[in-house]
Amino acid sequence: MKILAIETTERVGTVAAAEGTDVLRQLSLDSSRRSAQSLAPAMVQLLDEVGWRPADVDLVAVSIGPGSFTGLRLGVTAAKVFAYAVEADLLGIDTLETIAAGVPADNDRLAVAVDAQRGQIAAAVFARGDDDRLRVERPMELVEPDAWLATLPEGTAVAGPILKKIVDCVPAGLRTVAPEYWSPTAATVARLAARDYQAGRRDDLWQLTPRYSRRSAAEEKHDL
Image 1 (cartoon, one colour):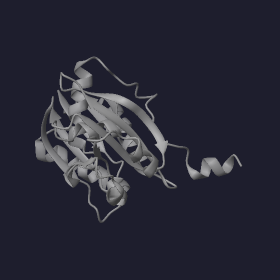
Image 2 (cartoon, rainbow, N blue to C red):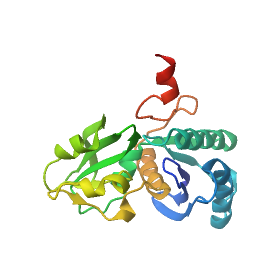
Image 3 (cartoon, rainbow, N blue to C red):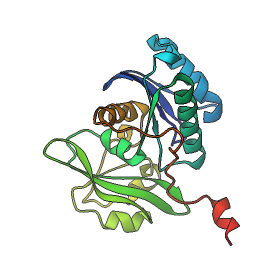
Image 4 (cartoon, helix red, strand yellow):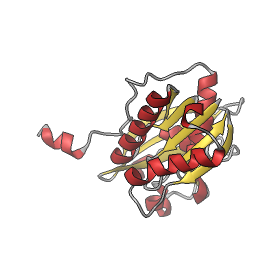
């Protein structure tokens, strides 16, 4: 099964091609250009490098949030348009789970967070079972960083792009994973999508939407 994966929830996104859980290639988007300008060229380059025609893609997988409003809209829209054009299946993958799944397996409990703006984070906690699968221990919540960190049990590993801002605030009893594991990647999106697809999960192309951590500032202002 040929998978095209898209991850655009952070400032610099990635795209990846995989056959099942075997990732063939991952490319980072051009950081000097907006993702809206660099995503399509990166997808074309990726398919060319792995020798696929667009119609060869069986499954399009995309990170659906939480994350950047603009990045989520771009990634999900691109995934849906591509899947529709080539008649591929579509799967949305949770961004926090993507980050957790990208961390080395020697971490049994993972606390993962992304910036939700306005002094808050979108965070969740995952635990690794005896079968080595990650399961949600605490679902996503919108919370202030210090309050969240204070609730985490000693020994918990902490990951996520929010660490770029709060790494110095992480208590001594917690473990900060290496920086290369802080951000979600399209390669991990592809692996999770392959797992979920094999388990029978499918998303409706017409119903799939980004999973925002909160309403946009414009929406909240409109209700005032």
